[in-house]
Length: 114
Image (cartoon, rainbow, N blue to C red; front, side):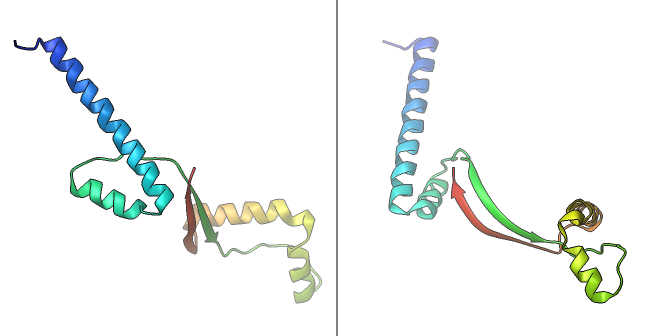
């Protein structure tokens, strides 16, 4: 007996649902065993597109900038630059530098699945 289009579509959806559950379960098992990279490589080698999952990524970015302030000398200027009252000026100067030139260094230090 031949399947109708609706029956065929239902079977295809059933197979896709099974495949999605299998990939989810396998990914969880790989996570627990620390095999994430191997799992991802295996799935890619077999033509399985993996869904993206959320990660928190810690980034250390530095920016060099100048701040103009009134001071009585070099040491006084250095002290005043770090004073609490200058926080907004520091943020504004850093943001202006980033917008104009980007970050001086940029390093990803850690990534963790959410």
